[in-house]
Length: 636
Image (cartoon, rainbow, N blue to C red; front, side, top):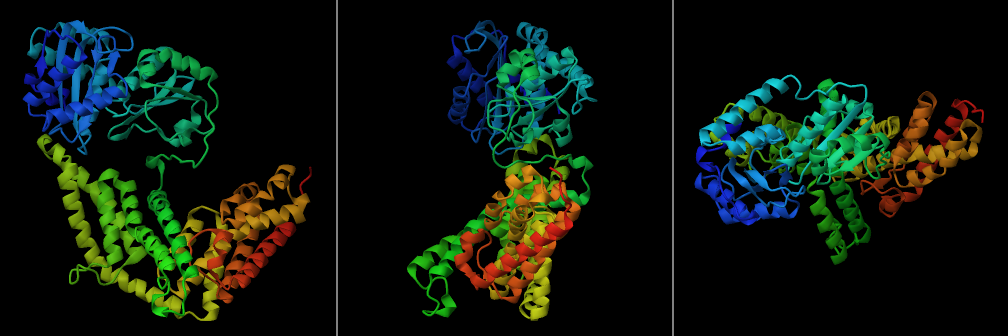
């Protein structure tokens, strides 16, 4: 796809005299309107002015690239004006602008064109090239110069688009502007050129409107000596925790890239607060790891709905009067009904959110809506015979919906790459959602009866379990919670518990209780062991030990991770045994939990809470004494 495909020759005006910035904007918009790029010129002007309000799009050196993304745009396009005498476009370098391009991008449209237009932005970093464009006498000459430069650019970058420049020192960067259209790519180009001049190993991620281009991998970030963040909008900084970071704007990167590389020498180390996002290199990941990553994307987005809604539902049961009407327990009193209604509304988003964000992880934005619909159909149990709902496939159905939607949309995107360029704008707003939602509807109507029957069988098996088998299940779930403390097995047990909780019956509540008590044991056991067996721990571990009481009582299993990482062969088995014992006792005492999280803060809604505390205490002391026996004495 060539740059010239986005420029209608009638959208180019050469040797124009412009009085001021407003006149320049009006003339450029008029060109877009004249070639059919706009549905509403006034609406597009609003988008242009909003972008200018965030910072001038005159990048200096005589160049201005105003741009906007708006529903007022009919199709992606580019227009240009040359103004040899120059116009004051409020460039930061104070110079007049004599070469002006305006980009129009459709709201919600495909971003393929932005990759092509980004190439033009990087070409404009060549001042000699810009000078020839300003001096062009005819439109054909103007377009010919662009085609020639683009061919040279392609030849020079084909083999190195996503590879780092070489050098002993390694620096990585991220560039991003509010719209992700122009400055993002020009800043990246400027940094890349300067890195080559300085002989620095360099890679840059462009956070464009269509998502991250050439994203940095975890390995590249880890190996980098420093990070340059040249962004005019917020990005995820957690991935740079512990690295030397230079914060700058895209204009800094465009005009003074050498200063950013100089600052990288003495930059302060960045320490992130809050959740940390881990990056991985998908190309080197196993299939299993990729599937797990997609699943966890769905689970992590689902949990706030499950936890918030689940706790409100639990409060409703706590406040209600069972004797009024046992069949409507949870909504018998007005206060209880309020909590139950709000909590139920939040809880009801669980399956659509799970499926939607699994699909989004696989296929990016096109998968999101299709996954949502698939998750909704899993919750309603739509079938061909009864589209209104019959046999919900619940959690398992939502998993199928998420993965089916994601991989189908990924395949559909590849198929649609062969469509004519004229259909580019309607793919994301018509073809993707229409085809995707239709197909996921067919898939879910086909599998809902099968998976729904499987769910009914599993529920029947769990409900009919003998006391011995239900205790065995408690052992397994409790031990899983302590195996990797936040990893795949822990998450699998927790997700199983929340899925059982959604059944809203005693067996499901017992399962959730066993899961939570199993997750509370590891930190509490660690805290006890540091007090009872201090010689088994280092000074630092002993000081940090009591904090794990808080972590454990709040159901934050991850508090035990540092201790497990330091001595996994002795610590993990000790914690698994104690958690398994706690899970078994919780089942044996028929303790129930109607909330999916909360630790001691949700004990008021625990059924048989006194014996639940006994299960927690016994499990914690079992692990504590095993730690005392198995761990070696530490010499201070």
